[in-house]
Structure formats: structure tokens, C-alpha cells
Image (cartoon, rainbow, N blue to C red; front, side):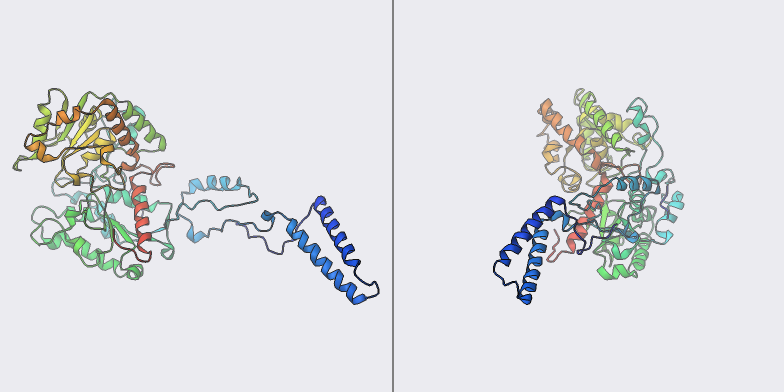
Length: 517
């Protein structure tokens, strides 16, 4: 599906109701006070008598107030939520929400429910259709060689996966799609539109989302001799539009964010004859937080998010069932390699890994993806990862590659050869300790023959392998994009982690003395 477009607090003058036992105590105190005072007065002195009566009444009132429990003196009620500040909700859930609220009883100490939007609310710009919907409507023109329409269907998930029956549990087959790695912008747009903290009132927003499909817009001009002006046109026009908006002018873009569904280097052209767009270098882009598939580790405003994979859980139970499945999977081989060699590249490292795998005497399973053998629409990749304890993950055409996430979702332990493939990229999504979930072998040790991949991996005990796999399985929810547009009930997926992180960053930027980290 494409984006489409309480009660008042009690008054302090409330009359207190006292129990008979309390009245008895008060009457005793007032009587004794009266007698003690009366022993020092002359009965015929009317003025003095009146004064004593007034003093006695004040003492009685004071004693009554002190005798009341503290909780009866002041009660805190939750602040009413105005209509303008309510998150966009699914009408189907409204009756459930009302029935739950009706069952809440107010005790002597009432506390407000936790605010799920305490980090702030998100306003989504209604960009002209030229920048998003029209790109989808003209999906057949987004690639010079073939149509992208099927890849961008089903809200960016692509077509439903086929050929997985017998490979994975039957009940989980509907949660799998042949998702394109560059469909991230469409997936995020749909989710932001349905986010519980989305607001239609910009004055109440902490963050402003720009739903510009920058990756789709530039993708159609990366080949076949298009000019640098062609590759820059969409971004230039978007910035002209956004800089006219009052909320942009208020912050100069500091509280704005967007998705750019490719790697950062596709938007960092410094010379006209070079690859890609110069979008990130354009005036106006400097302060925007950018969600990308690979970031420049030295640019604070680049935030990397996981590549979309084929698994899109429909519920929390889908997550648990999948975790149990990959945990209990019987692995047939020690390690695997999935990828295609680059014959045109001198000393191609991926070709070297493919040779290592083929020469590993049954300890490695290789999936040579030359041509279209591993393209979306086959189960070759998933089966290979499901059968292996470890998966070799060299850099792709850039430092990162989608295969890292295909591997980990299958419960296989990644083996890295460049730190920038994962360790300097996915801090919000992966464990802080690289050794807890992965193995690092420096590429030079493999190239010069100093290190044997098979020997290194055989040095890990079964217990160590199980511990690393368990850490990988634990992080699977953070690596997938859920199917429901509102997300899962009790599990944060990759989208949730990304949006929570963006809101936190923007909130931190507003603090006095904030400095880039």
C-alpha cells in the first residue's frame, strides 16, 4: 500500500468528611481545651469570653486538619489530553482503548500513565507528489534496464516470497517478501504516517520528517550518460521547497530528518564528472539528519540503518517463532560465502573468499551469485545461511552490504574483514562488543596466506559458537522491518530504533552547550 497521502482536580476548599471515631477525638480535645482556658477567666467578662471562644474554635479546626490522612488533602490527576495532541490512531483500536481506560480506578495516590511520546512528536510534511508519489507511479522508469514496479509494491516490501515452503516454518511463509535493498524510503514513509507520535500540528512537533525519495530520484540518473544536473535536479527542487517553510526557517533544519535509501556516497559527488548526486553538499542539507544504508563515519548527520531484508514479522509471536527456529536449526557446515566475484577488479577479495570456501574440504558452503543466481526471488541465500555456523562478510561495492543482515537474520555469525562493514556503522542496532556476535579477520592476513579462515573458525568451541549465535538471535528484532504499518505491539523493530534515536538526537541538540559527538 502506497503512502496516502479528565476530571478536574478537587478544589482546596472541599469539605472534609470525618468518621465518628475522629469526631470523638476532636470533641475530647475541644472540651479539654475549653476547660483549661475557662479556669483562667472571669465569667462576667464578655469580651474576654468571646476571645476565648474564637481561640478555641481555631484550635479545634487545626486539630481536625492534622487528623486527616495526607492523601485526602491533595489528589493528583492526570492532565487531560487535548484532541490536537493525540497521536494518529487506528479507529479499530479506539473502543479497546476506551474500555481499558474505563477499568482504571483512581486510588489514594494517582500517577499519570507513561507518555509513549515523551521524546517528542513528529510532523510529516505534505510534499508535492513530484518528490515521492509520482516516482512510485512512474516506477517503470526508475531503472534503465527493467521496471522497479514489482520491487516497490506492497508498501515497499515487494512481491510475496515464493519457494520457501519446506525451507522455513509454514506459518512464517506469509511474513516473507522478496524485498529490494533500496526500498527503504517507501517503507519508512508508510511507517511514519502511521506512527503513534505523529502529529498534524507542527507547533507541537519535536521533529519534522521530509518524505523525499532521494534514492529513487537519483537512481534513474546514475547510468547511461546522464549529466550531473540531471542527478542533482530533484534534490535542488526539494531544498527550494523546504526552505520556504516556516518551521524550517525557525531551526535552519536542525530538527528535520529524512530518509535517503542508498549509501551516503551516492549523494556526495564533489566533481561534476564523478559518480552520484551532490545532494548532501548542497546549501540547506548541512543540518538535516539523514537516514542512510551506509554512512560517512565522520559526518554527525549521517545515521545508518539496516538494509531491508525479506523477513517482515506480522506480530510479536512471529519474532519469537523465528528466533526459536534459527536457534534450533541444525547447521551442516562450519561457514559459508554468498556473493559474486568481481572479475574486473584486480586482486578481487570476494573471488579470493570464494576460492577459500571451495577449498575448505566440506567445511564451507558457497553460493556463487554470478549473474542472477542469487537475485530476489530465490531461496538460495536464505538456505545457505541457515545451514552454516558462520558467514563470510567482505565489503560489497561499498563498505556495507545487505548480506550482513540476511546472514544474521538466519542466525549465522558474521565474519568481517573491514571494520567499516559493521563496527563503524550500526551502533544503534548491533551489540557494543563486536566479539560478542562476530569474528574479525583482517583481510591482509587472508591475502598473504598468514591466516586460514577455516583454522580460525575451527578454534571456536561449540559453547562459544552458541553464545555468539544467541547474541545474534537476541538482536534480530532490531534488524527487521515489521509488516504492520503501526509496528509490533511489544517489540521494537529497526524502524522504531531509528525513529527513537532521531528524536533523542534532536532533543539533545536543543540542550544548552550541546556539541556534536
